[in-house]
Length: 158
Length: 154
Image (tube, rainbow over all chains, first blue to last red; front, side, top):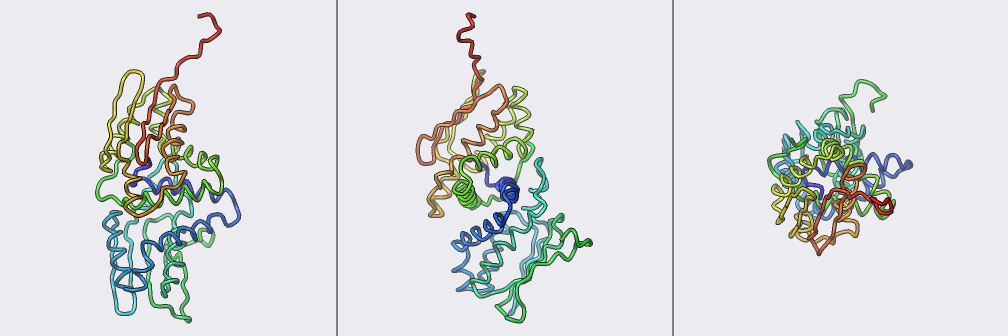
């Protein structure tokens, strides 16, 4: 059994394996993970909206030992991950982190949020730094979801 | 000494994520695909355990098993003799979590144990025997390889 504490290091190896298969194997996997996460989140997000999302991520913050703040406003939910335990473990790892490890998170979060009627600005900041920011708001055709890397200085890192 | 020794809360729903991951890789890339991922996990992620086994020392694996089975609240027994380490899992915490989540274990779910143990023993003086004895129970044996001297007249 892989301990639940160490699932992310296994996940990191799955990403490397799928990336090596080429094509859109990795992106297809993110879509499948997003569909599976619906079991935990979709009804909650649809019925309770931003407050339901806050309840979900507040629970995750405790169970995954995250250093993060999750602030609910009338028109949005803001999540500031000060120290992501997932990327931290992938990096604290004798096998090394998959360079695009962070991509799985917006890869499953954004399709699920959009299915629930919301959109998201996901700033991964820098794939080599275990911090990110997410702003979630009701779907707005003028403000589509997007993923940023605001902390990357070089275009090649994006 | 354990290379990874997490403390704090547990997010046991990761066992559900594991179920989905092995089903995804196994159904698309077969057991060879799973074997590749678990080989990388056993020999690169858990490098210190693997290096110990290659040197004939299973203490790192035993410490890892004890720490994380205790942490996950498993019902298990572990015995160590000169010839073998035997871990008898009566209630697997991973399978128990799947049931709590209402998930059916993938046909590949126990490969996380079978293929991990197999990869840990590859190129070492040990061999792994993993017997699934029921839904959420198994016996895992790491034993010293016996020399095949048949036909050599020794």
